[in-house]
Length: 96
Image 1 (cartoon, rainbow, N blue to C red):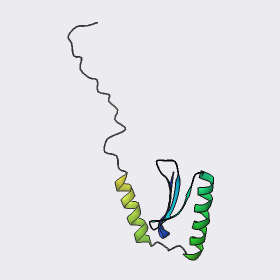
Image 2: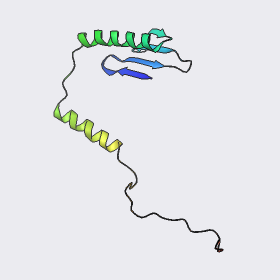
Image 3: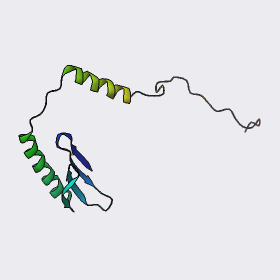
Image 4: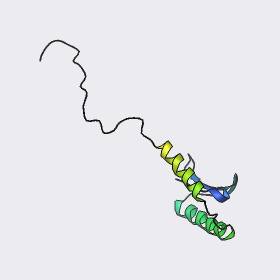
């Protein structure tokens, strides 16, 4: 599991040992063995930060740029709707 709040660089992630680590700007705020306690702490800190830091409005140009970048990242590199199925040629001349 990995939760991230970008405006405050708040990060909650589970490490390889199974311990949940709550960090803000690279500083560890706490470690938790249980998921529920980790989520409660993350949500509490996030709500506090959201009240102190109001959301910024994105302009139409920024929204368009984000949409274009997302679309470019997710373009398929192949035709997923090809109608013909290519069969591999047999490797031997025997029938059966």
